[in-house]
Length: 351
Image (tube, rainbow, N blue to C red; front, top):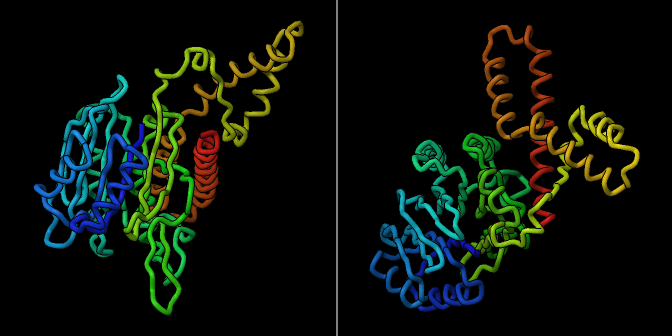
């Protein structure tokens, strides 16, 4: 299955429609979320018909700004949950599984962007469907790291911190995208262009586990100043049973655990000496899988727990008395973040 998100910067012209037609024809998405459409519902439905999509939902633009559109074909079922000028939230049914998709558009005004982060928090709290597999894609109008910007003045650290904080709070992890790093470009005559990574997909761990072969590709601009972003994935029920049975994944992040070396040594030594090398390795893999499930657990959950404890200590008046504990928690938090980054970097490379 292929999904696209794209800030079109207007679909009212013939040229814009042709660019959208080229995008859809080349990548054939089952679902596409478009922001900054600059069109009304009536025009959006006409475009959907011309592009041969079976479903369409539009949020009208306000004059020549804003506007959202969600298009999908007959291969999936879409149930609308909620919408606003900054999002369209729905449930997707495909290949005998259900998951949540939110097309997102961050407020372009810096002083109003906190409303977008509050919207994400509300969406996370309103999961009345009990479906934890959640994918969010779109133009967030913000960067996470200074390295996601080139040219122009530096981004305030607090802005980036606020973005990272809300993603952490709602338990979302970003994909490692393939293709050009920057997704937005502002050309400046006589000056260096400004490049930023504003468009992206983020997903819950449950969604990543549901679609472990998912990939993200930063595509062309297609006439906009934003690149279209594609995610592609299949569901494991469509894979041969031999590929699923007894499958073992070694997680690089395990090596950061203090007990890892001893666990490997113990499992290897406990294997029967009569076993050949492949069987001993298989036994070791079984031992590691069980150990990881019981002891390593959900890194994001641990990060949240350590953050909560750390925030509590930092608010204490007698900070000096808690200095040793604070340093210990900060070290633990750094290790957990490193483990989580290793986990998703390894997964993206495997894709």
